[in-house]
Length: 137
Image 1 (cartoon, rainbow, N blue to C red):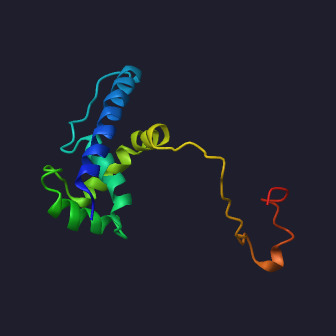
Image 2: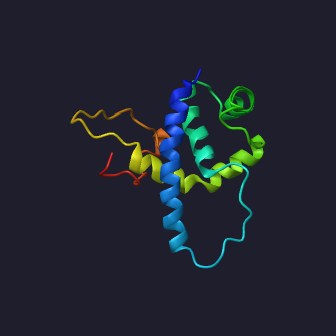
């Protein structure tokens, strides 16, 4: 399913980013950290979320419970329950968003595609009263 060399490569990139991110956040925070550190690192959580996109599984729960916890024990030995993992994903959302924004966006090649599929915003009888997208769409 997932190429293991890719897992290592993604983890290394994410881990380097998380170290830099932690330094910046620690400088900006006021006061002490009151939380106990998590069993899974921020890098592991973000890596698993990225690998899911490459895996071909339809649902994240199926991917995590049946694939990560069973087949990737060597790569991620300290996995937590699925419910706890979703909480960790929420806590690490900002770091993951910044990682994807800064490290994973490709350069524009000059060719772009725009989806021009019409989206219904209201029922047809109210179409003339709806002014939210007037002048834009």
